Amino acid sequence: MKILFIGGTGNISGYCVELALAQGHDVYMLNRGMRDSDFSGRVRTICCDIRNAAGAADKLDGMEFDVVADFITFIPLHAQDSIRLFSGKCKQFIFMSTATVYNKPPVNFPITESTPLKNPFWKYSHEKIICEEIFMKAFREVNFPVTIIRPSHTYGKTMLPGVFGHGDYTETARIKSGRDVIVQGDGQTLWTLTHASDFAVGFMGLCNNISAVGESFHITSDEHLTWDAIMQIKAEAVGCSAKIVHIPSDFINSIDSDTGAGLLGDKQYNAIFDNSKLKTFVPSFCARIPFSKGIAESLFYFQSNPARCVENPLITALIEKILQAYCGK
Image 1: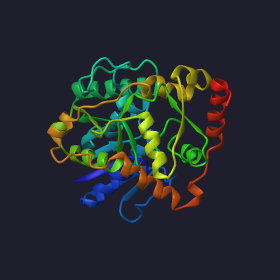
Image 2: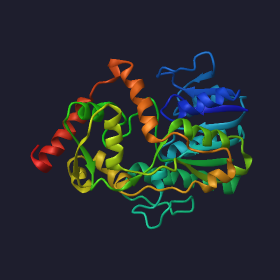
Image 3: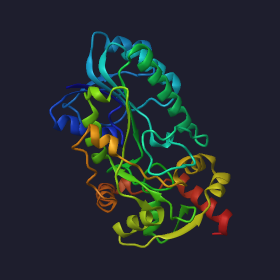
Image 4: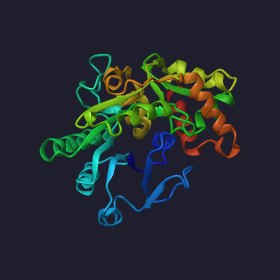
């Protein structure tokens, strides 16, 4: 299989590239070459800015792929550009959406692919919904061969999942030093964390799977943990106990709307997914890595290089500001 990854160096896409190489596929990556990659010499890199549509078209002239996997389309304009750029150049185009598109607040569980798409709380999710609609319209009207994939909260060695930040070491540093960490609400909502290596198995099973064209899938673990449990499992992995302070999502949003959007539009709700559809199309899929094992591997990666084990001063300041405003700490 000849597969082009748009991006390919991120938290999720890196694991997908690694598995594609392990399976012996002919792998290409299209990106700006701005981020270090572990794939030097093993993939063919097309170095360009996908947002420069004319320049990207020149670079791709005469090239065709079995699969194009787009990990970096976030707004409707990106979706429209991708349809123009890749029409007639691939047998399958995979759009990486997000499981946060599902109806918020949730009405029924578990969440399936037929759950309505509606998230008025988070612009990121709302724009992904519009992107999905653009791609599906192109599928219906001009046979653009799109498959939509919706990851939920997916982590790997370079990402430590938590409430604040984007997976850096800040919350872990606070836990290790005995400082308070914040969990939204009462900490008892159920959440799904998926290791990116498990996600990659589902992803690769959908690649070049022509029966998946015109379909949408989420790819998640079947393990469900409360947010309190997630924080304590992180703490146990570094030999500590987490000092959790519960703060309502609305209050956090009143202090910081960026963090608040991800809480009001996602993390404050239960997230329980039914993966039956994926398992029908990809019988080999099974999420094998529990969070207790996955987080230990992620922490090993961080702690193998002290330069990674640093706090983000902006995140630290935000956490302290919220604690001070809510409980005077």
